[in-house]
Amino acid sequence: MNLFKRNPFGHNLFIKKWLIRVLGLLTHQRFNRFNKLKIEGSDVLKSLPQNNVLFVSNHQTYFADVAAMFHVFNASLSGRVDSIKNMTYLWQPKLNIYYVAAKETMKAGLLPRILAYVGSVSIERTWRSKGEDVNRQVKMSDISNIGVALDDGWVITFPQGTTTPFKPIRKGTAHIIKKYKPIVIPIVIDGFRRSFDKKGIRIKKRNILQSMEIKKPIEIDYDKESIDSIVEKIEYAIEQHPSFLKVLSEKELLDLEKSNKQREW
Image 1 (cartoon, rainbow, N blue to C red):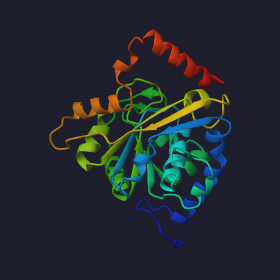
Image 2: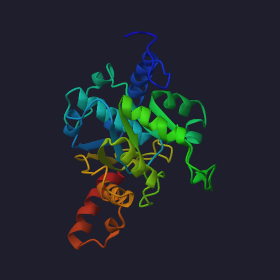
Image 3: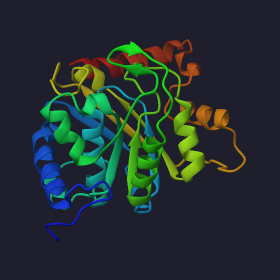
Protein backbone atom coordinates (compact mmCIF):
# COMPACT_ATOMS: atom_id res chain seq x y z
CA MET A 1 0.00 0.00 0.00
CA ASN A 2 1.08 3.56 -0.78
CA LEU A 3 2.04 4.97 2.62
CA PHE A 4 0.68 8.38 1.67
CA LYS A 5 -2.61 7.39 0.02
CA ARG A 6 -5.63 9.13 1.52
CA ASN A 7 -9.41 8.71 1.36
CA PRO A 8 -11.73 11.52 0.21
CA PHE A 9 -11.77 12.96 3.75
CA GLY A 10 -7.99 13.26 3.89
CA HIS A 11 -7.39 10.32 6.23
CA ASN A 12 -4.18 8.38 5.63
CA LEU A 13 -5.21 4.82 4.68
CA PHE A 14 -2.06 3.22 6.10
CA ILE A 15 -2.78 4.77 9.51
CA LYS A 16 -6.47 3.86 9.21
CA LYS A 17 -5.63 0.23 8.41
CA TRP A 18 -3.45 -0.06 11.51
CA LEU A 19 -6.06 1.61 13.71
CA ILE A 20 -8.67 -0.92 12.51
CA ARG A 21 -6.27 -3.79 13.18
CA VAL A 22 -5.39 -2.63 16.70
CA LEU A 23 -8.93 -1.65 17.69
CA GLY A 24 -10.21 -4.89 16.19
CA LEU A 25 -7.81 -6.91 18.34
CA LEU A 26 -8.82 -4.94 21.44
CA THR A 27 -12.58 -5.32 20.88
CA HIS A 28 -12.87 -8.85 19.47
CA GLN A 29 -13.29 -10.58 22.83
CA ARG A 30 -16.24 -8.31 23.64
CA PHE A 31 -18.23 -10.15 20.98
CA ASN A 32 -16.65 -13.60 20.91
CA ARG A 33 -15.54 -14.39 24.47
CA PHE A 34 -16.92 -12.16 27.23
CA ASN A 35 -20.19 -12.14 25.31
CA LYS A 36 -21.47 -14.15 22.36
CA LEU A 37 -22.55 -12.44 19.14
CA LYS A 38 -25.12 -14.40 17.16
CA ILE A 39 -25.00 -13.33 13.50
CA GLU A 40 -27.63 -13.94 10.83
CA GLY A 41 -27.60 -12.99 7.15
CA SER A 42 -23.92 -12.16 6.69
CA ASP A 43 -24.07 -13.80 3.25
CA VAL A 44 -25.98 -10.68 2.09
CA LEU A 45 -22.76 -8.69 2.41
CA LYS A 46 -20.83 -10.76 -0.12
CA SER A 47 -23.03 -9.78 -3.06
CA LEU A 48 -22.95 -6.03 -2.43
CA PRO A 49 -21.07 -3.57 -4.65
CA GLN A 50 -17.97 -1.77 -3.40
CA ASN A 51 -19.76 1.53 -2.90
CA ASN A 52 -23.12 3.32 -2.59
CA VAL A 53 -24.45 0.97 0.09
CA LEU A 54 -26.29 2.41 3.09
CA PHE A 55 -26.78 0.29 6.20
CA VAL A 56 -29.66 1.40 8.44
CA SER A 57 -29.82 0.01 11.96
CA ASN A 58 -31.42 0.47 15.35
CA HIS A 59 -28.99 1.88 17.90
CA GLN A 60 -28.09 0.68 21.41
CA THR A 61 -24.63 2.09 22.28
CA TYR A 62 -22.47 4.86 20.85
CA PHE A 63 -19.50 2.75 19.77
CA ALA A 64 -20.00 -1.00 20.38
CA ASP A 65 -22.68 -1.26 17.67
CA VAL A 66 -20.30 0.10 15.02
CA ALA A 67 -17.35 -1.95 16.29
CA ALA A 68 -19.39 -5.14 15.98
CA MET A 69 -20.42 -4.21 12.43
CA PHE A 70 -16.80 -3.60 11.42
CA HIS A 71 -15.99 -7.11 12.70
CA VAL A 72 -18.94 -8.76 10.97
CA PHE A 73 -18.48 -6.93 7.66
CA ASN A 74 -14.78 -7.74 7.38
CA ALA A 75 -15.20 -11.33 8.56
CA SER A 76 -17.91 -11.93 5.97
CA LEU A 77 -15.88 -10.37 3.16
CA SER A 78 -13.02 -12.71 4.14
CA GLY A 79 -15.22 -15.77 3.63
CA ARG A 80 -16.71 -16.42 7.05
CA VAL A 81 -20.41 -17.22 7.34
CA ASP A 82 -22.22 -15.73 10.35
CA SER A 83 -18.98 -15.87 12.33
CA ILE A 84 -16.15 -13.61 13.52
CA LYS A 85 -13.87 -16.45 14.66
CA ASN A 86 -10.19 -16.28 13.77
CA MET A 87 -9.18 -12.61 13.59
CA THR A 88 -7.03 -12.91 10.47
CA TYR A 89 -9.72 -10.96 8.61
CA LEU A 90 -8.40 -7.86 10.39
CA TRP A 91 -5.14 -7.98 8.47
CA GLN A 92 -6.70 -6.66 5.25
CA PRO A 93 -9.80 -4.78 6.38
CA LYS A 94 -12.18 -2.95 4.08
CA LEU A 95 -11.01 0.64 4.34
CA ASN A 96 -14.02 2.36 2.83
CA ILE A 97 -16.54 1.64 5.59
CA TYR A 98 -17.95 4.79 7.18
CA TYR A 99 -20.50 5.52 9.87
CA VAL A 100 -22.61 8.62 10.55
CA ALA A 101 -22.11 10.04 14.04
CA ALA A 102 -22.83 13.22 16.00
CA LYS A 103 -19.94 15.66 15.76
CA GLU A 104 -20.08 16.55 19.47
CA THR A 105 -19.81 12.84 20.40
CA MET A 106 -16.75 12.29 18.20
CA LYS A 107 -14.94 15.29 19.69
CA ALA A 108 -15.56 14.33 23.34
CA GLY A 109 -12.11 13.03 24.24
CA LEU A 110 -9.11 11.26 22.73
CA LEU A 111 -10.73 7.85 22.17
CA PRO A 112 -13.70 9.24 20.19
CA ARG A 113 -11.26 11.22 18.03
CA ILE A 114 -9.32 8.04 17.29
CA LEU A 115 -12.56 6.21 16.49
CA ALA A 116 -13.57 9.11 14.22
CA TYR A 117 -10.40 8.60 12.17
CA VAL A 118 -11.45 4.99 11.56
CA GLY A 119 -14.46 6.12 9.55
CA SER A 120 -16.78 8.68 11.11
CA VAL A 121 -18.81 11.02 8.94
CA SER A 122 -19.43 13.53 11.71
CA ILE A 123 -22.56 15.68 11.44
CA GLU A 124 -24.24 18.31 13.59
CA ARG A 125 -27.51 17.04 15.00
CA THR A 126 -30.39 19.39 14.24
CA TRP A 127 -32.56 18.28 17.17
CA ARG A 128 -30.17 17.77 20.09
CA SER A 129 -27.04 19.47 21.41
CA LYS A 130 -25.20 19.08 24.73
CA GLY A 131 -28.14 17.22 26.25
CA GLU A 132 -30.72 19.82 25.30
CA ASP A 133 -33.39 19.96 22.58
CA VAL A 134 -32.59 22.37 19.75
CA ASN A 135 -34.04 23.19 16.36
CA ARG A 136 -31.31 23.87 13.81
CA GLN A 137 -31.17 23.91 10.05
CA VAL A 138 -29.53 20.94 8.33
CA LYS A 139 -26.02 21.78 7.18
CA MET A 140 -25.75 21.00 3.48
CA SER A 141 -22.07 20.17 3.95
CA ASP A 142 -23.12 17.30 6.24
CA ILE A 143 -25.39 15.90 3.53
CA SER A 144 -22.63 16.31 0.95
CA ASN A 145 -20.13 14.48 3.17
CA ILE A 146 -22.49 11.51 3.47
CA GLY A 147 -22.76 11.56 -0.32
CA VAL A 148 -18.96 11.56 -0.60
CA ALA A 149 -18.78 8.56 1.75
CA LEU A 150 -21.44 6.68 -0.26
CA ASP A 151 -19.56 7.39 -3.47
CA ASP A 152 -16.42 5.94 -1.91
CA GLY A 153 -17.84 2.95 -0.05
CA TRP A 154 -20.30 1.66 2.55
CA VAL A 155 -22.01 3.89 5.11
CA ILE A 156 -23.62 2.84 8.41
CA THR A 157 -26.30 5.10 9.84
CA PHE A 158 -28.65 4.96 12.81
CA PRO A 159 -31.72 6.79 11.48
CA GLN A 160 -33.37 7.28 14.88
CA GLY A 161 -30.40 9.39 15.96
CA THR A 162 -30.58 8.02 19.52
CA THR A 163 -29.95 4.85 21.50
CA THR A 164 -33.50 5.04 22.93
CA PRO A 165 -35.68 2.36 21.28
CA PHE A 166 -38.82 3.09 19.25
CA LYS A 167 -38.01 6.73 18.66
CA PRO A 168 -39.13 8.13 15.26
CA ILE A 169 -36.97 7.72 12.18
CA ARG A 170 -35.35 11.01 11.16
CA LYS A 171 -36.60 12.05 7.73
CA GLY A 172 -33.11 13.18 6.76
CA THR A 173 -32.21 9.54 6.13
CA ALA A 174 -35.03 9.22 3.60
CA HIS A 175 -33.93 12.43 1.86
CA ILE A 176 -30.39 11.02 1.56
CA ILE A 177 -31.79 7.79 0.09
CA LYS A 178 -33.81 9.67 -2.53
CA LYS A 179 -30.87 11.94 -3.39
CA TYR A 180 -28.06 9.36 -3.67
CA LYS A 181 -30.10 6.20 -4.46
CA PRO A 182 -27.97 3.73 -2.46
CA ILE A 183 -28.71 0.07 -1.88
CA VAL A 184 -30.31 0.12 1.60
CA ILE A 185 -29.50 -2.80 3.91
CA PRO A 186 -31.40 -3.03 7.23
CA ILE A 187 -29.67 -4.36 10.35
CA VAL A 188 -31.36 -5.30 13.63
CA ILE A 189 -29.19 -5.58 16.74
CA ASP A 190 -29.97 -6.61 20.31
CA GLY A 191 -28.14 -7.38 23.54
CA PHE A 192 -25.64 -4.51 23.28
CA ARG A 193 -27.52 -2.32 25.75
CA ARG A 194 -27.34 -5.12 28.33
CA SER A 195 -23.66 -5.85 27.65
CA PHE A 196 -22.16 -2.36 27.69
CA ASP A 197 -22.61 1.09 29.12
CA LYS A 198 -24.27 3.74 26.96
CA LYS A 199 -21.01 4.64 25.24
CA GLY A 200 -20.33 0.99 24.44
CA ILE A 201 -16.89 1.08 26.05
CA ARG A 202 -17.30 -0.38 29.54
CA ILE A 203 -18.56 -3.97 29.88
CA LYS A 204 -21.55 -4.05 32.27
CA LYS A 205 -22.32 -7.77 32.11
CA ARG A 206 -20.67 -10.84 30.64
CA ASN A 207 -22.11 -13.90 28.93
CA ILE A 208 -24.83 -11.84 27.27
CA LEU A 209 -26.31 -13.16 24.05
CA GLN A 210 -25.90 -10.38 21.51
CA SER A 211 -27.52 -10.60 18.09
CA MET A 212 -27.10 -8.99 14.69
CA GLU A 213 -29.43 -9.73 11.80
CA ILE A 214 -28.47 -8.44 8.37
CA LYS A 215 -31.51 -8.35 6.11
CA LYS A 216 -31.93 -8.22 2.35
CA PRO A 217 -32.07 -4.80 0.65
CA ILE A 218 -35.21 -2.71 1.09
CA GLU A 219 -37.10 -2.34 -2.19
CA ILE A 220 -37.41 1.37 -2.89
CA ASP A 221 -38.67 3.31 -5.89
CA TYR A 222 -36.28 6.24 -5.51
CA ASP A 223 -38.18 8.53 -7.89
CA LYS A 224 -41.80 7.79 -7.03
CA GLU A 225 -41.87 6.92 -3.33
CA SER A 226 -42.57 9.64 -0.79
CA ILE A 227 -40.33 10.47 2.15
CA ASP A 228 -42.98 9.14 4.55
CA SER A 229 -43.18 5.85 2.66
CA ILE A 230 -39.40 5.34 2.85
CA VAL A 231 -39.42 6.23 6.56
CA GLU A 232 -42.14 3.65 7.22
CA LYS A 233 -40.22 0.96 5.31
CA ILE A 234 -37.14 1.65 7.41
CA GLU A 235 -39.19 1.52 10.64
CA TYR A 236 -40.49 -1.93 9.77
CA ALA A 237 -37.15 -3.19 8.43
CA ILE A 238 -35.19 -2.32 11.58
CA GLU A 239 -38.14 -3.39 13.76
CA GLN A 240 -38.71 0.02 15.32
CA HIS A 241 -42.26 0.58 14.06
CA PRO A 242 -44.79 1.04 16.90
CA SER A 243 -46.50 -2.20 15.83
CA PHE A 244 -43.53 -4.11 17.26
CA LEU A 245 -44.73 -2.98 20.69
CA LYS A 246 -47.83 -5.16 20.28
CA VAL A 247 -49.12 -7.45 23.03
CA LEU A 248 -47.33 -10.78 22.79
CA SER A 249 -49.02 -14.17 22.82
CA GLU A 250 -48.28 -16.63 25.64
CA LYS A 251 -45.98 -18.66 23.36
CA GLU A 252 -44.13 -15.53 22.24
CA LEU A 253 -43.71 -14.49 25.88
CA LEU A 254 -42.25 -17.88 26.76
CA ASP A 255 -39.86 -17.74 23.80
CA LEU A 256 -38.85 -14.20 24.74
CA GLU A 257 -38.31 -15.19 28.37
CA LYS A 258 -36.10 -18.08 27.27
CA SER A 259 -34.10 -15.75 25.03
CA ASN A 260 -33.79 -13.11 27.75
CA LYS A 261 -32.36 -15.67 30.20
CA GLN A 262 -29.58 -16.25 27.70
CA ARG A 263 -29.11 -12.51 27.30
CA GLU A 264 -28.99 -11.73 31.02
CA TRP A 265 -26.21 -14.07 32.09
